Amino acid sequence: MKEKIYEIINNDRMLHDIQSIVELVDSLIIYGYHKNSSDIHIDPTEKGVTLRFRIDGVLTYIDTLSDTSYEELIARIKVLSGLRTDIHFVPQDGRFHFSQTVCECDIRVSIIPTHYGENAVLRLLKNDNDIPTLGKLGFSDFDVERIVERLSHHQGMVLITGPTGSGKTSTLYTLISLLSTEKKSIITLEDPIEYAIPGIRQIQIHSKHGITFANGLRSIVRQDPDIIMVGEIRDAETAQIATNISLTGHLLLSTLHTNSALGAIPRLIDMGIDPYMVASTLSLVIAQRLVRKLCEVCKGAGCGACGDLGFKGRTVVAETLVVDEELRKYIMSHTSLGEIGRYIKSKGMKTMYEDGIDKIERGITTEEEIFRILHE
Image (cartoon, rainbow, N blue to C red; front, side, top):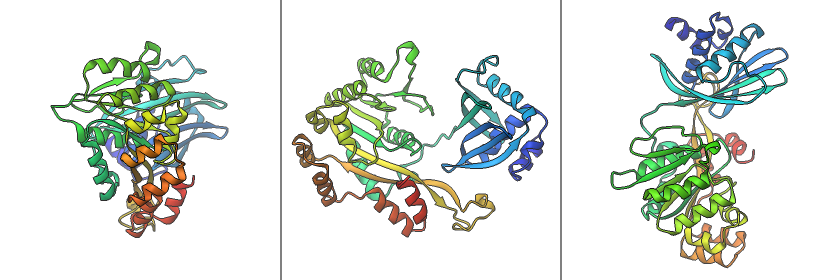
């Protein structure tokens, strides 16, 4: 079997030739793993079952399977992830651990009914023991210095902003690993827990059992934490509790959906947080996106190393907003965002666009890639 798997990895058009469903599922996962895919999409269509992998943030067509193997394929995935095989018209979510000699990872499964059948998406969560440094993620030395300085205060609120798929969770894990010591009690609230971190108490959100971000925050304060990580501030209630906790001497890290670092300020105020509370608790906002890196072998021309894509891997483009005493006065006095923007620029803040230009000049990515990510 191992020899067959290696053949598949080196030939994009052999997946449809596999007869065994067990081997097909194994091959899909191993192939996706070695292609550095984050997700495997199994999409039933009028003309067959389309397989697409999200590679470096971009969906890439891989193959089309026959309808005959489709039902067995979905059934096999359901069995592995502990889902009901007799239910076909209700969304189901599951998870399983995959281990072979050539790869090991956790798989998060989402299955949902569509017009042509059940659509499955498998998220590949690699079990990497080493959490990357901020520099390895792509943060500039300038931004790393600002982030580390803010974390050294050990109190207040640190937010990471950006759309879905911009790498916010990876950055959160990196920050937590920087802060983790035996002298610090760190608790996280996550939905879902993507990676287990040694020495950290991680709590999975279970809304059906009453464990929401808001309720979880109320409970873990009684667990005597020094540092709290909340996967996402989704609503006004969670935002209110998070700011109250930050005001009591805790360091709280979370994510927020805004387009820029500066956008976090009006977003919190729109969620019902008093400007005084925003000014008093907010310490640092990191806004980020992920852009594809040029292949180091072919520099965009396309080669075997990058699967003829010209890109291999992704890097962060980011901006860091440091909330100092002067900025706090601006926030409390309802100063316009335009004036605040001019102030933070005068204090040396570099925008995501400027960080992107720097990465273009250094040959890390392309102008088209920066434009695609920052204007999509």
